[in-house]
Image 1 (cartoon, rainbow, N blue to C red):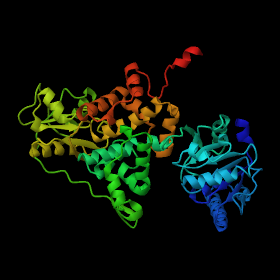
Image 2 (cartoon, helix red, strand yellow; image 1 turned 60 degrees about the vertical axis):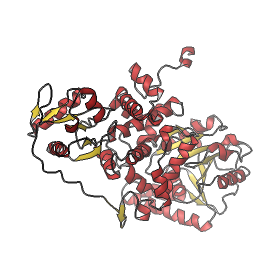
Image 3 (cartoon, one colour; image 1 turned 120 degrees about the horizontal axis):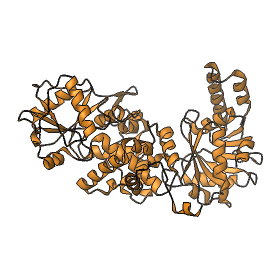
Image 4 (cartoon, rainbow, N blue to C red; image 1 turned 90 degrees about the vertical axis):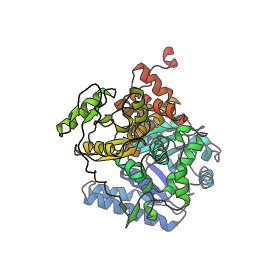
Amino acid sequence: MERWARQVSAIRVIGTGVMGRGIAQLAAASGITVELADARAEAVDEAIAHIGGMYDKLAAKGRMDEAGAAAAKARLRPLGDPLAPATGCDLVIEAVREDLETKRELFASLEKVVGERTVLATNTSSLSVTAIATALADPSRLAGLHFFNPVPLMRLVEVIAGARTAGWIPDALTDLVRRLGHEPVRAPDTPGFLVNHAGRGLPTEALQIVSEGIAEPVDIDRIARDVLGLRMGPFELMDLTGLDVSHPVLETVWSGFHGEPRLRPSHLTRIRHEAGLLGRKTGEGFYTYVDGVKQEPAEPTPPQAEPRPVWVDGNADLAARTRLEVSLRENGVAIEFTRSPSPEAIVLTATYGTSVTAHAGAHGLPLERTFGVDPLGDFASRLTLAVHPGADPAAGRAALAALASLGRPVTVVRDAPGSVAQRIVASIVNVACGIAERRLADPRDIDTAVRLGLGYPRGPLEWGDHVGPATVQKILRGLQDATGDPRYRPSQWLVERAELGIPLASTGTAPADLYR
């Protein structure tokens, strides 16, 4: 397999859109001759001119020498007919439109003009590789090779074996991807493959939080960026992608896994999709856009409030309690260190996986003066204050003013089991654990795919280990017990590793290991 990857000298790319151009640019720069073909002959010349221009820009920036750029240009060969004899090609990559019948017809015709050892690959982002291969007399020669846009910059490539793909081909393509300077991951031929499946944890839970009236999209995006360290919040990301793309993926992955509750989409995207509120491309989505620029509302100004002493709940997370007390005291807030709060004190509790209402009731705290502060993120960049319907508004304003004195923005949300950040992280981790549990992908590939494909600060299993498997399980159990919703049932992969004290990214000991 490794030998095949090293020996690949010529490939054909069919389809000269954004993806086809990117694949051709990458391959030619890596020393491979690339035949470019398209149903429209003029599109081939346009693509070659475009790719040549990209090489020139790289050379001008010093990221490619002029001789290398000239050599790469010389490896681009225009082809008038996509179905011209391809016996000299080691690999043919299809990058045409996402339509099952179109791809089937193309591969059925290609099979007649390629060499016996020519590998066929589809760059599909959503269609079943197995379903595409049914058009072939020999389905074993087809695999998925899913690049991400923009191809030269997005280093991740999903290598997908169909049900009948020959065993040597995925390994050979994995080696080829490394030769191209990109990072391969082995993905299952299931809805969403790996990246789009693992990526469902973020938007589905964010939409659920909005549908429950806990927070607005802008609040969730700010928490996702500032507390979780995501480059973009889920709603600005859906606006960037466009609901015409995001909504079908949400529906397809969920239905493809026969209504798996963890992947359940929301009615909100269906309604907005039908209304044409697609995001940046239409000027209006979850945000409004003026000349393509997102119009994000300003942060609300914290209210003026009469200072009141603060009592930090001793039944809360101990480490979080200590950090919160120290931060408040250092910023001039009067802290009570008594066994119970005085009649004037504001009560702040920092817990995982439970609502303020339930926690206060269980520990005899004064409900009207008790508020939640999310401990996730160590109060480092943004604080989240949870308010329940029975809270005294004046006490709430005093609590908000006390937190605002720390000099960091505060987002106020409705009380619910688990905070916004906790729910999002737990969902991301639990979906990834479900993928690992069903042996759809290697844990290392899951983390790599999400880091490189989605730009998360950590892979989801790494993230779960950072937060702590027991803490993630506590958040999910709290949500499941409070709501009865099976979407929050913890994956057995998570439960076992929390109980055994082993990392989420570890496969542990399997039955087969006893025979080795």
